[in-house]
Length: 166
Image (tube, rainbow, N blue to C red):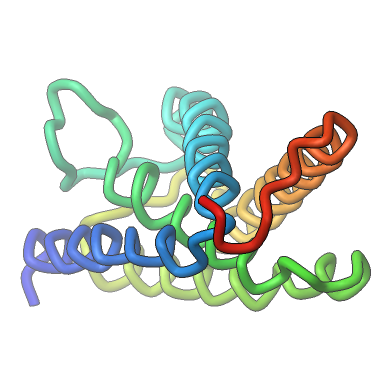
């Protein structure tokens, strides 16, 4: 499979993942907020990594405008974070803490495979899949902490949404 076709496939998977946002109607606001916040966090973290050339994306959309691969940054990683938060929505904190690896490790392994077999990702200066897993794990926890804080503040203000009311 050519690299560009794989990029198109990854993009299609990411775009079809938007269905996940509509899975539980009563929590749409949370899922959208998670998606947008993860996109912001990823953008802020990805910039320095790319500027220092730890990771490069030789084949990407709009290379004149973006140094990053927008399919990964704005579709795949945020969708994965939404899935993690949906999966852990009613879990106890300890289970939530360890469940993140069900999402970050496979993504790191897939990215490692893509890096080895295609020209979509290039790791430089010692960067490897462990770094990716670490960054994903930390950002997933950060986003989870953020949405828990938003939910608590919403409850304190009395703005809790009834199930299915959205």
